[in-house]
Length: 215
Image (cartoon, rainbow, N blue to C red; front, side):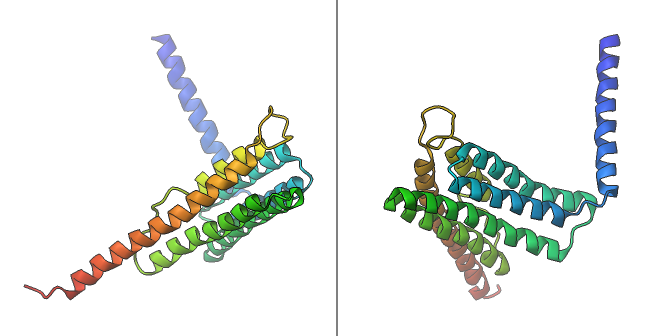
């Protein structure tokens, strides 16, 4: 009986600590925009580290910066400090962050004379932008569009693995940066096609519904 009471007490204590920490955080001056900007800064740091071929550190900075990108939205909803401009800023910085890091990766491959990898990075950048655009445009037309494999979290995971296990990243004899880019290029392209077909089906179905005369 006592162990059960002790575990229940520990659970209540942990819950109280989390609640207290959350309340203190909400009462602080921290804003969702500050978290977004911090995430952007860390991605810039990651890009600089890539150009210096410090891939392991770049991977860590990229991961932490990407985590910050997920936290700003949650903190915005939890704290009630979110604004319309904050949502716009978050989306804008998300696109910039991904592009900056991938541009640094392209520069690295260019210095090595790996034209195929550079082309794959370009395809990945365009694909990532189109993945985001197709969703935004579809939702503007009233169609929910979250289908597809290469969502941002998936792209973050793939690129993180590529950076952490790149040539000279000190985590064994791995060369996974180029394969990661090739996978991202294929998946982003495929996801764009998935979303285009999904929206086409949804809009055609809506058009047929409008064209059907009432009984």
